[in-house]
Image (cartoon, rainbow, N blue to C red; front, top):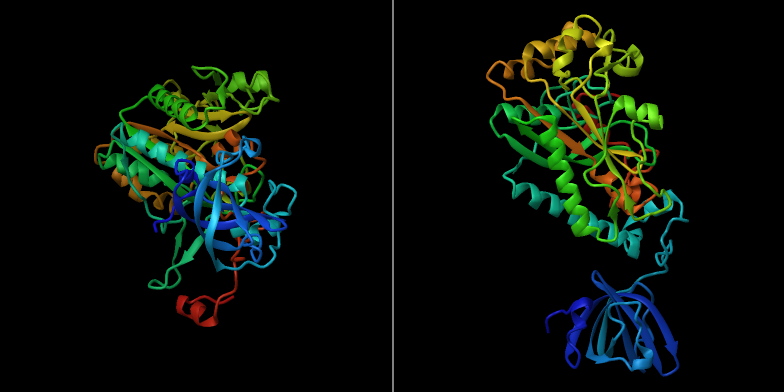
Length: 461
């Protein structure tokens, strides 16, 4: 007999079905035993007369029986399957479970981070976490379909790439075939997506994995995160803002119908206006900050292109820092301010825009530099050494072969979901997050490796 899902059983009253799942709970009433069976679609009450006594919570079972309507006085309106129950004919225990090391019947907020990540495969069984992970999948699918319907191409870019001085610390990977040399995991696909514009792709996107060796905090995961990477040729800042606003407005309407966007079109503030009025460049624009279903999207733009920053802060000891990019070194200066690059770089505005939501920055983007001479000028103002400039020679050469003006945006999927769902930190929307210490869920990496592996790589510790 084909397996029936719990959600399907609602329409199968009077029919015999085979259900598979976990024992969510069990209640013994003398001769009659009640079990709530759980699968990925929900829970269903199972009734056994003189049966089911051996079952324990979280045992994996297969149960065959008759779907029946519950007596009217026993209907449970709080669950979708509350009008039916399954009368057991036979069952089989497919896998036994010992007592769980952490409870999974609550929301889990009161359980320590270390325990939840150690037993993450159990933590993900709880209803809230299961819902979050499913919603994350639905968001990814919505965004993918929405962009492809508008002629975007999904392109995967390399994970093993080149270390370049872009701000955050790189994760380095030794190259066995070239001893003494290293790959770096990408902090973002920034250079690759610009090269795709040179290649004539014109409309690119990717749900990209990004890697940065930064300290964790509630709204920033240690090690790795996911961003919706978007890049387009022949666009203005207005084009990017309009596309992003339409995409996320439609996403909220379809996938989060209980949420209400405060204002459409989204408010727009210059960096100066945001700082003067709110004292922050990521203002919380909600009308009622206690309303968990209110989503206040907004834009902040006209950021300074540069900020003064010390050598240690930006380069971690390499180069001679003069000015640091407030966004990144590929952001185009505002067209009206290009003459100021040679006069007073601190007064140059960048063609940068940040997407804010309920007091968090959930995405950033810019119109990019597409002229080699301006890119070289930016490198000089940053204070790159000759060697550091050479690390970008591939990009500067590409810019000599006819480059379309281009720009894009990269909303952080983890942070966006965290804010929309009202979760306290990113770990609540990531299946297997890192601890704040950098340890991975379940597998407890990083770990020591065998001396043989290090020898093959030409590394000593």
